[in-house]
Length: 225
Image 1 (cartoon, rainbow, N blue to C red):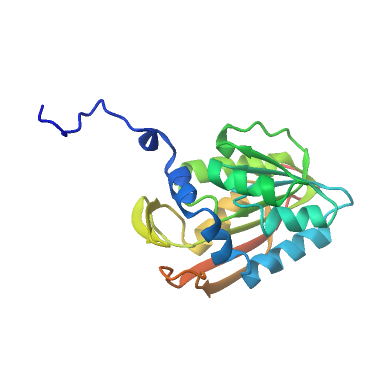
Image 2 (cartoon, rainbow, N blue to C red):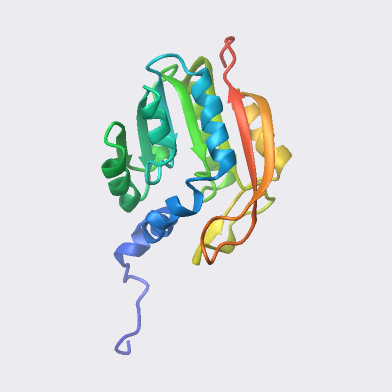
């Protein structure tokens, strides 16, 4: 083998990290700046907070830097567990939102007790999973909600699988569903979609492009799953 040639057995630390961790470690605080003041995100948070019981137990899937989601929930008097695969994001979140608990982990590996949560936030945290993984996670999240609990979800609706894209200057592979299929996935998990909100948003970043966003406001019905 020539000097400098890479062997198949040579695996770097970055190769071992999940793609989402590589992406969001690189973006860091720039992601918060680009998305923290998105009106639709803030409206979804307000909707959820209005429906939570006092001192609710909530989960923030893909919690990022902790702002605005975990910060808003803590500010409203609720307990928050934030889970993010990016250690850089978790370090920022711990510093910025000390009133919440954050874990650096893949949400697919985190145990979730049935009927244990009052509210769940899933803001753009599915896009680096396969469709099967997204569907399986939604079923687990629905089961973790108490009957009558609420979930807000945001994603980029598109009929794509493992598509290579550039997001805020970083290469990433993305998978999603068309809008009606996102809704079908959520309903198949056992949730009722109370309303949907579609819009186009351009993140506050010089390398960002306009992107379609879909927000779903959901409830686990009292009848259970």
